[in-house]
Image (cartoon, rainbow, N blue to C red; front, side, top):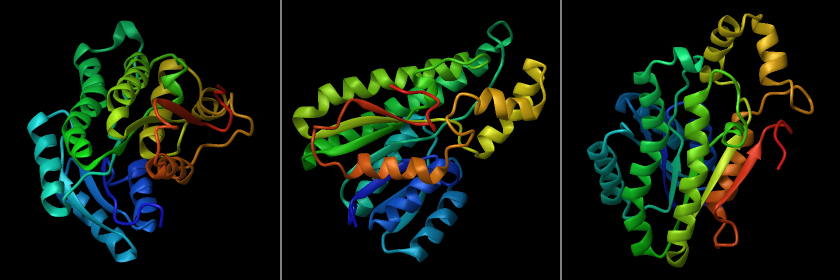
Length: 260
């Protein structure tokens, strides 16, 4: 029960990696806010987690690119549970194109969801964390926070940016007991990754099997995808670590694809 009674907001958590983190947190006794675009889906996910216990969850609609929506979601959390102990900024999408073919609107959309979303949720949560004596902020980065791949100019730019944001938050928040860290997964077999397989095959002129074996898993030590459960365990460690000894850091979870 590492998170017993702690209030945790997780964006993009009705499915995928965010949902796995929410499940792990509820298993550790947390009070989890499932924040996602569609309130009905968020609440359905929350109800399922609450039925499992021992923690509990509730769902809210949150567009992380909308400052008013973010502020309203954080305010609703504090109204219901009185505090915010953990923020996991997880909401994200993927769009792949060569740079010369990348629509500017898609570039702006990618950066807005990943970077504006991280900034706005952080900005909304920090005052509550300061008033209560601390908290943990966790950003969902990627191996692409450290590496680059073709077709992913916006994604790589955004994920690199999260490292800078986390380090500034760690510097500014340290005296108030606020820690900020970044999880950097390799390829995790989620719908987001499944969507990329045919897209990259088309753009690169190779088969879908080659995308998986060479592009996605070729640099791993064992040819295996990272799992959502792997990422959730790291998110639990960052959330439960109580001192500034671990802040401003990134931890790569990638089957050895990238090694610091």
